[in-house]
Amino acid sequence: MPTRTDRTFSALECADLARVSYRQLDYWLRRGVLLPHRPASGSGSRRQFARHEVSVVRLIGQLMAAGAVTEMCADVVEVVQCLPLDQWSGLLVVWPDGAMQVLDAGTPLARPEGPAKAGWVVDLAGCVVQPDEEA
Image 1 (cartoon, helix red, strand yellow):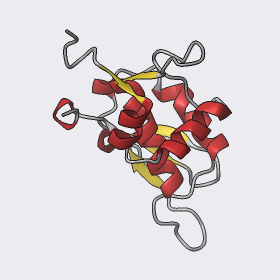
Image 2 (cartoon, rainbow, N blue to C red):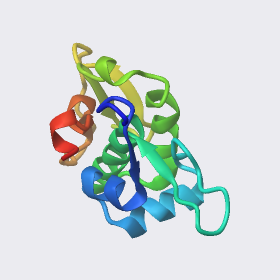
Image 3 (cartoon, rainbow, N blue to C red):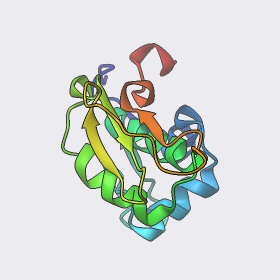
Image 4 (cartoon, helix red, strand yellow):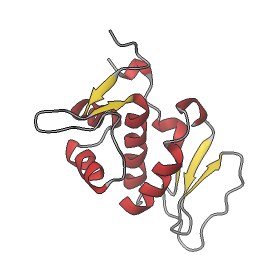
């Protein structure tokens, strides 16, 4: 029986835990923004997602809700997929000039010129799916 750390989730469970719709998740998968832990390998097979991938999906959902576009999210996903979840604490995703960056939370941030956009900063720690959410 899988432990909490190596458990995988179906696409529906992933979407639910990440707080996005299944349709959004499927779109991002088809666009190549992210890859599941175990991709579907034919008719009748199911994609499986590890907790790390579910957290990445939650991050994409939060970035999109804050005004990012899919292409911008793909750049961030490349960076955060390499980081273990325990290193997400203290990191921010910012995009003051249309180019997303992953920064240490201690980095001084300059507000963009003109009207400030709410949500141009997303805290990665808030995207991590905790084991107690997996019920």
